[in-house]
Length: 279
Image 1 (cartoon, rainbow, N blue to C red):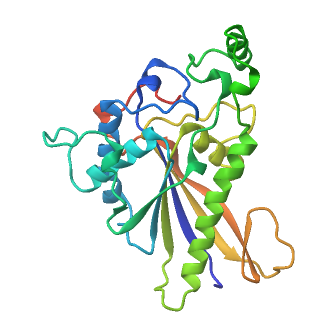
Image 2: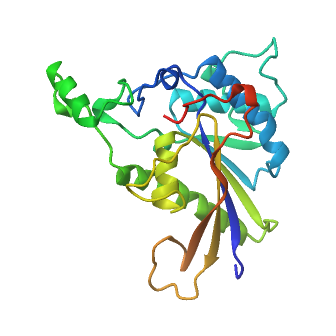
Image 3: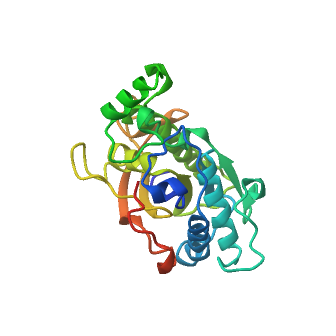
């Protein structure tokens, strides 16, 4: 591969949950369900998404979803919308993950726990204006030991999210180098995940969403953030650097570019966009 190929990454945050609406921190330890509005948001995104993007093809798309209930329900709604189901359809099935299909238009759906939300420790299930220190003090007063409120660092979240990203990059490289594969200028991956994971991906891995100490990245419920990843084989494969993957004897480097706004809600029908839905 002498020229770069493009991997389009779509970061799709889950729909509104009851705890989002109440301003309560969820994290990895609270497996909340989406509200009816959150389910309808996802249906709206699914209905509009492929009208504005390259249609899915088995070899050029992949769909990877967090294992948590709210993301699986969101992907279910997305699939309904992609198949032409409207949010107000009287025959709309419930937001039951038992109905989540194994594929969408021939593209397998993969569930991956590495995309689950960041563990927020003692802040989970508490109002989002309560600090970590206050939350931990509250837990201690209740007799809960520190070991019971595990909190992940951004670095830990970045490590597991980067694994998913690099596997996708390698998969695209392998496909492009397959002699039986029809070359394509671009490939696409839909990651259905959480606000905390998306912020870490944008800021710490893709380097497109500001740095530590800067204003908090706002990622709304059911929003989509697109990042284009350009992949190119390095001339010198002896020493891998930052943002590189090795495939066989070759080293490939990648760079990321944000396309459009972070937390784009334009796929959601306007009447379903919720205010203050970025927690």
